[in-house]
Image 1 (cartoon, rainbow, N blue to C red):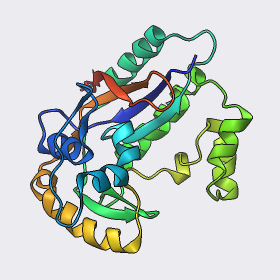
Image 2 (image 1 turned 135 degrees about the vertical axis):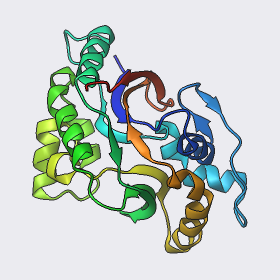
Image 3 (image 1 turned 90 degrees about the vertical axis):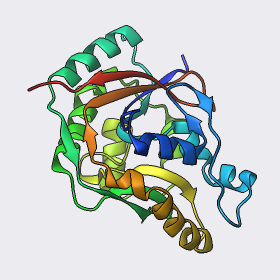
Image 4 (image 1 turned 45 degrees about the vertical axis):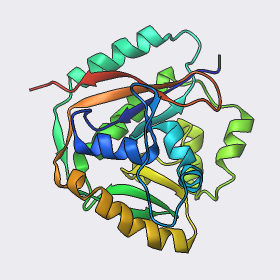
Length: 231
């Protein structure tokens, strides 16, 4: 089975951040429909599509549990049941203000300061749902290792199937591919201005989302929003 699932945070559909972020990426992953992109001076539509191809494929999100295939004996129904119960036992929280940041060569939305509640949520998602994750094969591990990993990252990759978890986790919402310096210098201030109204709104984690990719190369869809509802 090639279907992959991912546990993500995605902004509420009522927020400016959701609408502006999805517009920038040219796709609404919940409705699974294309959106008109904003016009950026000096950039054609085709150029913007190229510079945002991977983020658009995954949809506007921040990773809590990276994409995985279901282990033998687990079903989408059982995953949804446990995720719904998990979310209901969490308390909503606000994220520090976000800003457009250059992160490992790509542009992303990152909080201006560490969000301890988000890191705790991500850690718990990684560990609680690891039993649902099929162990990656040698080819998938080799793909992950095409980027230089530290010894700690490689150990996390072997243990959890993804190198950027636990001590290596950083909350972010990816906006672009890796950019050359010219594009980064141009697009960072443009995106900061484009998203300025959205970034003035509070970002509240009041749902945990399940995304699904039906087959390799297809776009991820936001299939479920589970309320974070513990008092």
